Amino acid sequence: MLWKTLLLLLFYYSAHATVTHKWNRAMLFPAAQRFKRSSAAFLNPVLQNSLEDVVLLYEFLLAELDIDKTQRISIKDEELASLRKAAKFDTICNEIIPKSITEIRRLSSMLSSYPRALKKEDFERTVLTMVYTAYRAAQSQGHQKDAWAESFVNLYKALKHDLMFPYNKEPS
Picture 1 (cartoon, rainbow, N blue to C red):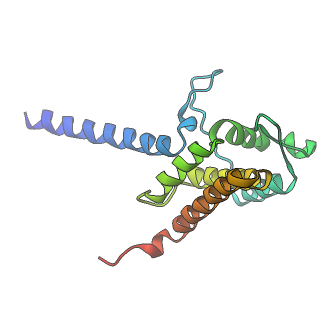
Picture 2: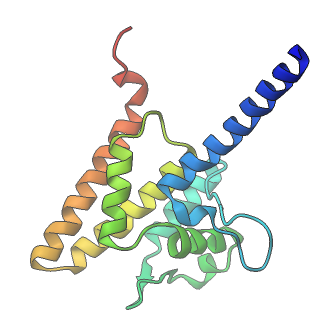
Picture 3: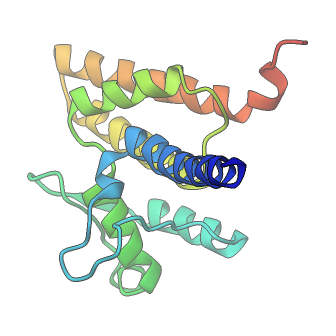
């Protein structure tokens, strides 16, 4: 009986750890948990795995992005756009990051109460969402501009809090 209970607790712990990890990531970026149509893998690419990848992401952002009327983001530089990492960048920007003001506000709200430091893929996606929000704020006018600017500021505050997370802990 003790072995059965121990085995059941071990199974429960394993299942809980697996489900909780996936659920937390899905809560911030639900689109990252969808299945790709062409395979059984999750649509969950990550751009930054090394310092070179960080530099490449910076180059993508400096190379001038094109955002069409359907809000599809692409890299204007054909040479950069032909890289493998550019395909991941395209997937993240066009399939995963939120594009509507309500989705971005939901993300900001979730980030403001996030209990721990962000994973690198969530941080990366939040930065790209912030870049998109800055673009939309620059292209909007009147009340819409204010809404996009407010969302930009909220994302900035969330990223700043995440970067300062180890230093913001209250003494025990």
